[in-house]
Image 1 (cartoon, rainbow, N blue to C red):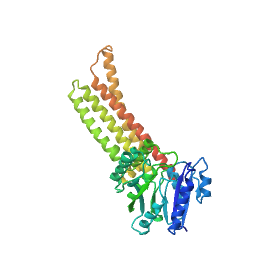
Image 2: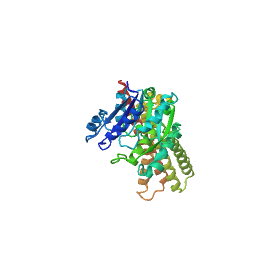
Image 3: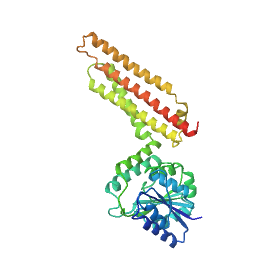
Image 4: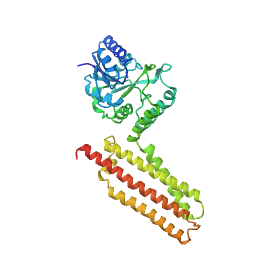
Length: 374
């Protein structure tokens, strides 16, 4: 059995994959390590053939995606220590030799490379990533999950076989990098960092700054929707409710304040529902281990939400019909009832939001039942 399994995900890396494999082989040979190099390939060029001819064991994921490539690589890996590295020569395999002793010592379960603590060569990383995107996403991840790392998206990392078995990794896309750190921190794995040198990419980049950044952020929201949706939504809802009720009770012509209150109320309610949807999806997908959310999912009643939504909707319709009749009574002339019209609109929107929210959560329950084989 090999001591090390090095997994390299590839998609059209024909220019660099052979050199990448050979550098790793040379590093392992000098250190006297037995190792296997697994190339998880989704290419449309000759990458797979080149990798095989250079000593890599090539496997083929059924679906595209950074995470899917690694998930298959994990299934194929036989080593005691599993390392991950991109195939575009941005990382030097020599750095693995600095990371391995930390795992062998038994003091750490996961070792991350850190480009931000190490050296980023000119042209290796866009300034937007180096000074804003990467530090910001890493800061958010640390604040939410207490990971205590400096570079959450470094593609060079290693772990013990036991650590891999403890992680419940399932993401198929770029958010896989965040998922690994979140899972490790959530399950109490001991994480260390090693400063590394980051080299300019050979060939065209497959990264999309906005799309990939959003996927990482969205994944963190699945685990912790509170700071993103629930708390801001609750604040907006309370402020809107207080403002709308105060203006409505006072009467008069303070329509701008009533409109602002209604807008905050609707936005806050939608954010609360979105936060609930994120948590419900997280529980249905098996990410959340919250007992409260599990109980909510288990005892969720579509009928109750429909009744609440229909009651709100009916209230809005009744007020709206009353306004229409009053308007008709004036011969469809001037009518000073803007506040009631605003109230009708707010109730109608809240009712519709509640009805469709209940339907969405019920779909998640149907999905979960299907996954469980019920």
